[in-house]
Structure formats: structure tokens, C-alpha cells
Amino acid sequence: MIVCSQDTAVVILSYNGKKWHELFLPKIVEEAKTGYDVIVVDNASTDDTYQYLQENFPTIKTLQITINRGFSNGYYEAFNQIKAKYYILLSADFEVTEGWYPPLYKAMEQHENLAACQPKIRYWREREYFEYAGAGGGFIDKLGYLFCRGRIFNDLEKDNGQYEDNIEVFWASGGCLMLRADLYHKAGGLDPDLYAHMEEVDLCWRIKNMGYSIGYIGGSTVYHVGGSIISYGSPQKLYYNFRNNLILLIKN
Image (cartoon, rainbow, N blue to C red; front, side, top):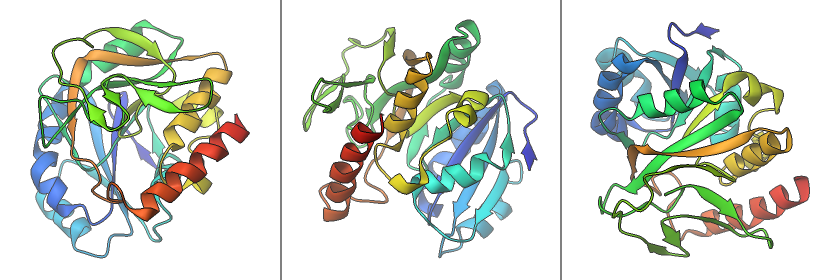
């Protein structure tokens, strides 16, 4: 069991993620002085990622999972071994910015009914634009179609300051998601059977059904590469998107 010294555990699930850690982990570790612990969970990598982390980032904590059963199961196993007031799920292919963490922490501390929140998510490759998965906060229509501010189907909006607000949303992106640890566990955690895609929507929906709210915090910004594990447009991605969308509608 890892007991965090700070209120928040920023937990990065990594599968063969060495190239992303070389790019993004130094800034994440530098920003840790604003109030969080960094934990990297190696999800049965087949390269030398784990050794690289131990040799180059002595201040972070590491966990190893022996069998890779996907994104949701990786976090499910990891959070059963981490004790903190708050968790932040942070995918390995995210770049954080200076001061990204305090606005999220402030919102969670000020609003007891806020169970989870996300920052503004912009596209790493075209940095003035919002990113596909999460953008300016997630919603769902009456037919069960998931969408978010900053993206209409495959078209991304340019960030002109239109989503600088703090608002309640239906779901927050699992790529960078801050959660109250006690409510995460009370809700049953991420569903391991979903493997990847929409597992955060399922979790947010269950938490909302418990009477809590989900938020978007426009004063915090991160950048997402996207498609680094399951590539955009691949049959595998399409399969999990359609299958998991049906599952979460039936479940909730």
C-alpha cells in the first residue's frame, strides 16, 4: 500500500510509455511542488520503462502490474493499493502546464458535493485547438450520444477563451480526471470489464446517481497527444466505443 504524503495522488498508468515519460514527466514532477505525489503504474510493459523510471525519477513512486488487462483494470488494481484524499488519473501522453493543479484542488476543496472534475484539454499536435477526448467538458444527449464542448463530431474548435468557466458537466475525461478517493471506492471504482473507452463516463454516471456533481474547471489547462495506445480510426477503437456505449446505457 502506498500512503501519499500529500492530499492528492497523480497516478499515471503506463504501458511501454518511456517516450512519453521522457517528454512529459519532468514537468509533472516539477509541478508536484504545488501539492501532489506522483505515482507511475507500469501496466506490464514489455520494454525498459520501469527501469528507466527508477533510474531517472527517484522522487516518484512506482507500482508494477504483472498482466495488462487494459486501462480500466490497470487503474482499478492501482487504486486498491494507493491511499490519498484525491486521485488524479493522468494518461502518460498528457503534457501539464504551469499551475495546472491548484485550480482543480481549489474547486474540490470548496465544493463538497463536487465528486470529480477535469481541466481544459487541448490538442498537443495543434495546440490552439481543443482535443477530442474531453475538451471543454462532457455531456450526453437523450439518445445516449456522448459529446463535449470544443468538439462537434470530428471537428475541433479553436480555443478563443470561450470555455474559461467552471461548470457542472455530465462526464469528465478519464485522461485527466480528479476524483474524491472515498467516493471513487464507494461507487465501485472503474469497471474492469470495459477495458478501455467510456469507463470514465460509466463511473461519472454512477457517481451522479449517488447525488454528486461532476465539474469542468476552465482555469486549468493540459495538452493531450491522443491515440497513443489504441490509434484513432482503428477497428479496435471502433469496437470498444460501440460496445462500451451500449454497456453504459444498459448499466445506468
